[in-house]
Image (cartoon, helix red, strand yellow):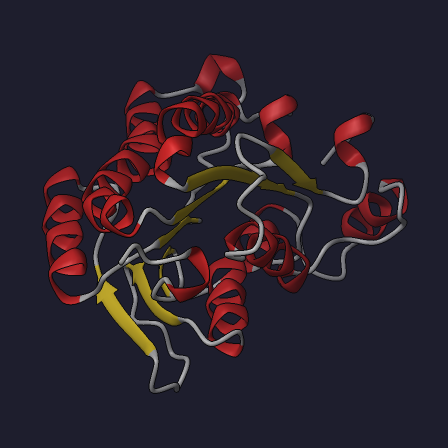
Length: 247
């Protein structure tokens, strides 16, 4: 008998699940009844019987391949949330190609490898959810050459996969956050600073986002009931994607 989407196992792999947006996504999915596997450099500190951690440097292609093999050996993953990311900010004259290579590996190649690993189980179930975490910076932001390029690449990748996988019951969508108050955000803008207050005032909704705002958007795309939505990009950015933003 063919398994229906509502009967599909609720097992989600979340990259970068040990901190910030990724940790909030893990918490949210756990609350919704998912088995959650965090793949990150550090162990996720959420104390929950359905939370599992695989410690891996996802900028290392060999390590990522090994982790992907271990992931699908232990779990029947039907939801992949690729959230892990770094910025490597630099104005154009200072951009280093080694940094670009690292961002390509983390933001794009890692997503390809993990989804490839999960595809057999998804196709067998005729159900799958892939959510890529891009960024509002995909539409352009000073000092973000490598980051914007690779985060924009996620949009093209998702649209292509949506076309290729839709017939298998697999949806592929993108959540593009920003500006969200996380440790990575505060590495660039000091918490409580005038710059942070000015930025919040410049956001159309007059506040900065929280990790939970993004987690709820991810949960929407992950929901088995939302199988008629694929190849889409949802900006969780307080309206900044429709106007200018200066950090």
